[in-house]
Length: 387
Image (cartoon, rainbow, N blue to C red; front, side, top):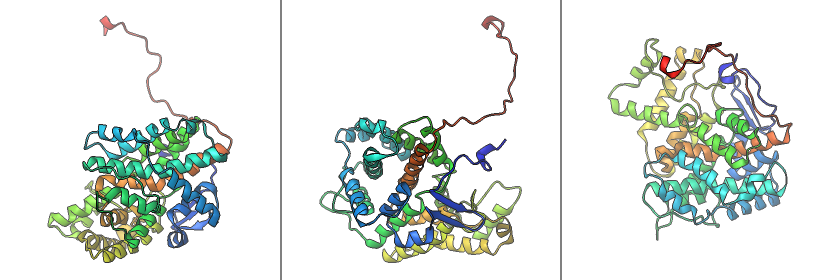
């Protein structure tokens, strides 16, 4: 028995390497620190999906494909208006991904090689940000913004989110790069809950769109894609409570209390999550660029500093993880709280696609875990009148 599959290898993969004891994360062999510093999100998408960093010609063609497929079919706009105003954005994203495939029936029979896969991967990567932006605009009662082919991937998303009629969103290079960094750091992370879900669904030979939609549903859970929402809510509670940070640290250490500090510890990392260190620096850069201050960031800094000096947290290897600072970064950019899991999904898209492709490149075997049955046996049917 291995509940949660913490010690069970489900596949062979050459996409992402994690050494949790040492705090190491590599994409296709490249350290995340180097990728985060030097690469764009589109480069990382190509790297994860195809295995190598693209050359200039390949990258240009990939960007052109993303620009070509950014727009949604006009008929889809009516569906956004049909959702309740307070519909969860992740529910909309999952539903719309399956719906988009209905407008492109050729993608339903695409597998891991050739032009058909390349087109399908680009179509999915491009349209997911358009769907996300449209769902946000519809929830705000604002007109939908169509993609601008002259903008790159991240700048285009910010335009579709925040431009208004007769007032284009003012692009800021620091903010655009910060968004790219956020997406890069979430692009893949080995066999986590949502990636394992994508591979499980794909093992039935389900198409790429439906497999990815299942990953969105898995990511929706508060223990996975919603974790940074929990961090922001926790920091806000500390700010407004009137109590000291020490009070909450002591509460988290109290064995009789169910309270825990969000954003500390990780299922895999028993050292610093390397992504958290990268994000910490970027959050500060964005706030300075925008001439903003955020009291939550000050609380986060103090909370991190105090826990790193506390033997309770150090001995249990409870270090800040990627969720600890990612929510504050999204908040600085202007992303609303209920869109945080959607942002995670946009970032994780290339990793899901890469895993779907890798599964199909290997000897495909449908996932079928075993169980230990604990129920009753040998029971006889009792007629309704005798129950």
